[in-house]
Image (cartoon, rainbow, N blue to C red; front, side, top):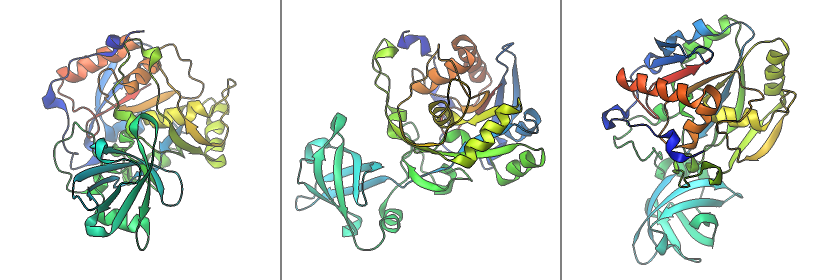
Length: 341
């Protein structure tokens, strides 16, 4: 399967640069997989498509202000860190630029000395393993000196950090938001619960590998990034209960899909677990757990559009994307959503 099979042309004006004032007023393109039928709705209409006993699976990760702008100690040369993964109390894997300034033993300063870092080793793909030094609580200092790491295609300034968080975000650890969840409001959740929809929470900390382009022409040669996940016993109970009753498991976002498919057996049973997943889902994949999907519109030739194509069929997905473009939907992180049934 070739990379160009997942290409589409997107006018730059359709890349959303800022969130809507009201989260659930984003548009919702509903794709029925069996017929290919499309409906144009708004996200607030979601409860019309869910039934009592269905299980909605959300990713409760929280985005860290993981971008750090600083300088090299002594020389003053500018540096940028993005935190990827906590390896130990004060030891992190980071990506940085410019990389040539970051040899083992190099030290850097952020926030006028509130936070300092030393390079311990050079890791995979040029990432660095660093140790941070500070007085106080790391998360508190990170809130003071860190910047929200918005995707590279967003050029506008984000006035309110919370608009790049889901309303149900809880557990710090992501370098990017699980953007399909940005459309939900507390009122919408209440409407779903009133209808008898169950909500199961999983955690997957989104890495910047999400934004890395696929560079191999044959997509099967692509090396998938790892992301840390957790699925607890209570979430599994709710998911398995829905399956046993013949109800649907509805994943909110590709991150929830990755957790569910990593944690499911061939017998369509969910198993609690914690670890790293590098599952790569592309057309031909047989889904074990996910029955419906809520997702945003994804970049051409990305692993995310490949996952959505695996779920709904490449041709139907690309046709739906063309319809969205013709109707001037907003694309990517702050854009509109799809419901695939």
